[in-house]
Image (cartoon, rainbow, N blue to C red; front, side):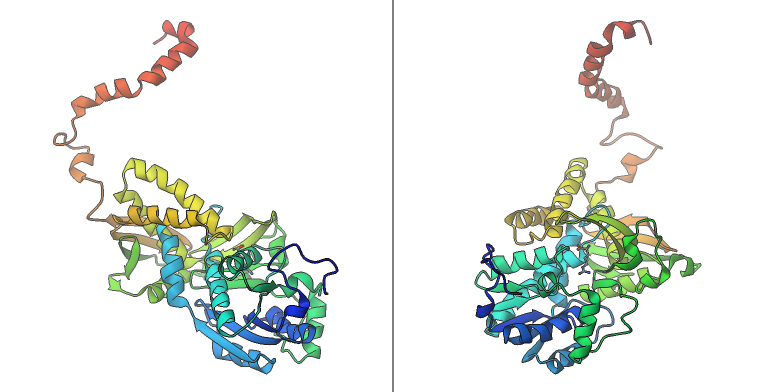
Length: 423
Ligand code: ARG
């Protein structure tokens, strides 16, 4: 496995220089095999780091014990949920962040934080190298390694899944030989799952066949819309300066607010996205996402923003939102343009205060009510009933004449003669 030619990439490792490795450890098969494999291959010590970003149903004590049993000299479990929602998810809400029209970026938002913690803990624990379980075909390797190369340029990186050339069966065999517990049989490979507070993704198996509609067993978070309650439910979300602060009138911190929103949405079958995605590394792939909290909160936020923004703000912001989402998707969280854009997002969100009501019913989310002290809206002006005040209907024809002036001139230049006789 040692490369014949010196690697051209500055953070790739010289096997003789690996003494103590910080392994980003999830407790799954790949990173468990890795935990042993690194000790064998490099004669190195392994410090495991597991990051809690609110993966539903995960027991981190079990993960920790497993790491220690497999020979880690230490396993650190970091509860990063607060930091994740405040520093990563909240800016994403303010930027209405969705990539490729459907993916609310939960994984893409989590990776720079996980990698930042890896740098911090590697330094604290005296590690020379960071190891992660990403494959060579995904976006996550880009996000993690770009972060490490930016924040911890003295650290080396190893990505065994990318280099060890073990297939699934060999991995399972390796696991069995080394006393690593393998969940279920090895007959059906599991879906590849990633999840946190902001959503859950599944890849692999039949998902790779584009004509294959989703099988029910993929949905582990969201109720199938067919099985959702017959009764619709209205939820209200209150925002202050772009930040969701209350659900159904109850003020909540961000972590419980996200969890509660996800629960209600999941019950009503909300947030299933069957998504074709252009990866950064060139591949086009299909993902099944379950994103109940993001679907509800982004719908509400977008609606409120539209209500308080002017026509000009409302036309520009989606362009910047899209740019923000692309940078984050592409693993460029630390790129200064992201912070520049965040400054704009903050300014635009200064007015985003108010409450949005949404009706949830068998997978659908529909805005049904809006209120804001900053709404650029005046029922008196908008009504069909009367005229007067700030808006003069008498001024409308003059406006139309000038508003259409250039377009009329151009029309005449292009179609002039033939049209003169008509109308
Ligand atoms: N396609 C999504 C992304 O690129 C989700 C990736 C999920 N990651 C995983 N290791 N299963 O962000």
